[in-house]
Length: 290
Ligand code: UTP
Image (cartoon, rainbow, N blue to C red; front, side, top):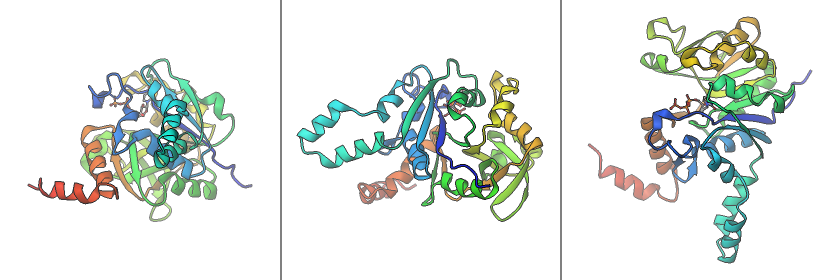
């Protein structure tokens, strides 16, 4: 039987963004501009390029700017039209046309697992993607597309992973699995933020997931874990113990843009790649080489 097409994605965006305070005190972390677009637009463009048609954003207090960004801005469009700013108008239209958007409020930030559970009624029995807006993965083949191909082949959940330095495993969910090829692993276990000497591998979960609706049963039965939050990793761990699940090593350069240093690195990368500013930016950076 052919697996159902993946057309729905959940973007959890209700977290407090404490690593980026004070910038995130009154503005959503997901709206931090990376060069000329907010972080969340990068991941929604990635999702749309992989066939996603319905985007469910989990929001919370102080996150209204996200809804405004993906809505049609009538006054702004009229202004651009009347002033002959065709390119700007085109780029605005593209944003609201990316997908059909739904917003769900997570009343309290009770963890990533809980945020996903909030969208259960919109998922029904469909397979779906989860993308974290602060993980930017840059590659000509969008990261989610790489995973969709594997999902169709295996017809089971696929988690995006990448190798990380041994000293960094304590910042991630780490998988334990058996290699099936250079880039594909059957996952048997997952551990959240292990100490380097206890990590089962150096393969970290990097904010891209393709899941089936069966995960809701596991999330529902997950007790609050670290920080009293319902952790997605805990539900995935139970799932992996009982069912088939795969880890795909994603091609592409990844930036943890929810962290100040990661965000700076991503900004430099996007600036260097931009035809608009790269020449002058490169010259500017050369003047700063140590
Ligand atoms: P993070 O832990 O990276 O985000 O969660 P955070 O809590 O916003 O940031 P820090 O760690 O305090 O700096 C990963 C993603 O899950 C969402 C966040 O918005 C982020 O995109 N999230 C997290 C929720 O939607 N709800 C939650 O309860 C927790």
